[in-house]
Length: 557
Image 1 (tube, rainbow, N blue to C red):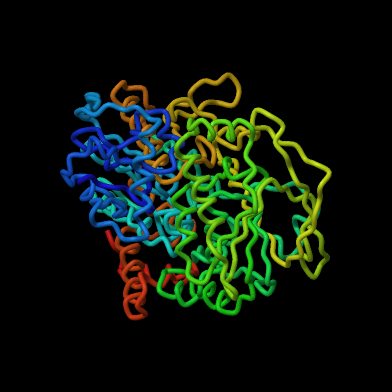
Image 2 (image 1 turned 90 degrees about the vertical axis):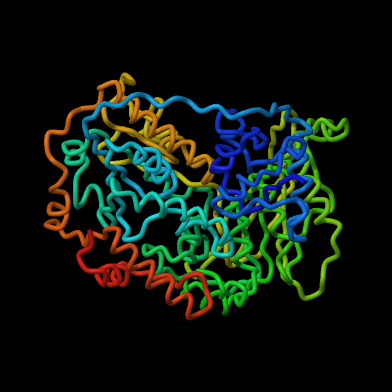
């Protein structure tokens, strides 16, 4: 019997670390790990020890004889990976940690998302290192709380890993504290030997077409934050009165939005979706969602697990084009059975969707490949339609527009073409790449490329908005290793002030600081309300509500 990894896989690689026979790939040491959709268990190498099941933070791994029917396709998905990936089993080797001085090192981490927590997880293992984590929101966990779709509760299980970190005695929260307002970057540098920025990429990328700012043309980033209860977006108003919605882009976020728009609201009512979003979705008129992609299925930016999960939606048809147009290179590779296994699975799933009969009265998610929007048409009252041009392949996987154009009537356009970082006060910024320039997580100056001692970056602000939780784990660990190495080598700057005055300093400047006790009080309030309503949690969505809940814990630690 072998074990099988299924859809909730978060790619954080914790299962790799505990596998005694190296049967889970790609590993964090393999180049493909940085772009992998998920991890895969080699059925020929697995020894059925069960260590990965116990370690998986999102409960994504099962014995092959205990799979739910909906997860049975993952037997083939796991096995297919090893058709074109030759890996060797064997004992996993771990790198020896450097010898650290006995001196204390205080590290400030700005941000409280996955990249921040995975760095903290590594740092707090060392008794000499104390970690202070800052975030401008009263709640931690970043996009795990405000980005993961509410109907993907298992993925949120990674919060258990973060919860274990926050309980460490050498870890301290400074939530509801904004760096740049309540404490400056220079003041952090004065108080900490190392400052790690893991602030993500919070803005949406633009389409750059006429009509993009009309009412009814919205960013997927905003919509996701709204239905997930992010305090900055709780007061937003989204009009779902159009029967047809168009999503531009075809990554996982695009599929999340499409799924939320057509899922029966009563199914969502059992999740932690924000109450205000649930109320609006109950009145939604959306019946069809068109997912517009400028390339074909072979270049789909969504993962196979997210694609496969669309087929489990009750009362929803997944509609594919009559013909899947592939590039010449992909078509040739498919014909001689040399197509990459992940792409081959994507194409196979698309054809299986195409063969399914459509049901009268069902809602629809319609994939429209090789199409690019050219203009969003409307007026001050809102969007009326989207004009687009049809694309074609011209060799080497390249595309170009054709003379074929079209128009889609819609009152809702969701732009889902990626995230973009923004400048961070006190740090250089590469405007072209929208990242903080760095070398092995160490921040570089904006001119000659010299390292700025004691400054580090991790996550999307370091590498751009690519990869999910798993890649952020590797990225956070890399940043932690850089800090530890610099500490061991004695190259971190010595603080000129003691960090013990931080609480007094930020409080004097108006911060209603939330510590661990305050966050646990918020967590308890939300989960208690959720239990009463038969839900995972009922989120508090305003800063005032969150602050009031936190204060119920008293002054805390």
